[in-house]
Amino acid sequence: AVRKVRSRTMRSLLFILPLTGLRIAEACDDRSVGSKGLTKAAIVRSNNEYFLRVHGKMEKTRTVPLVGKAKELVLDIAQGKKIDEKLFDVNPSSVRYHMRRIAKKIGVNRLYTHLMLHSFITDLLVNREVPLPVVMELAGHSSAATTMTYAHPTLEKKRVAVGKLGYMKDA
Image 1 (cartoon, helix red, strand yellow):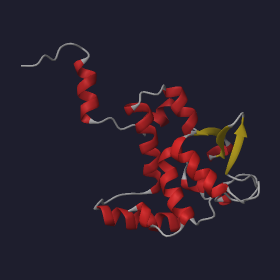
Image 2 (image 1 turned 90 degrees about the vertical axis):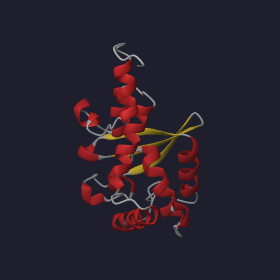
Image 3 (image 1 turned 90 degrees about the horizontal axis):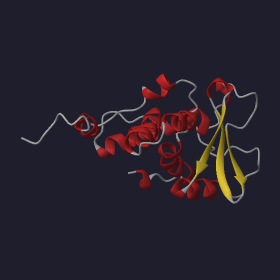
Image 4 (image 1 turned 120 degrees about the vertical axis):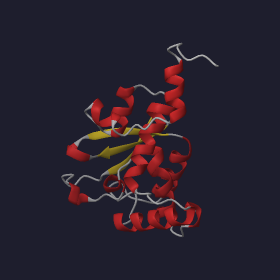
């Protein structure tokens, strides 16, 4: 459904959100959130590696490595842009509109941009077992409790966890 979005920038952004943990205000450079005039999301290159430098909530800055598809999409969008230019020149309400259309097409009741951050954190923390401090930093959280509210383990993950106790034996 995302592939049918006409705007290349919008299509790329919809793919990038769950791959980077960007919040919609960060990705869309919504300066009303308070960034002291700084570009919210900027590409940084160091030793042939690419990162997103993100000025997020509470004036925190974090660095998110760009790898795989996220790197490819971000570099494609960045071509021809100036250093201080918005990376994703789209309106947050437009992103939300496309999310609602995609949800309708795939038959999902609730699909919203902040859910992409939940997916990012759950995938790293629960599915790929990335250490909590790393996930906290990628998400821009200063509290483990905040990060944990975004993690949603599946029933199968819970089953495996309880099974490690050794009390559950196949009947």
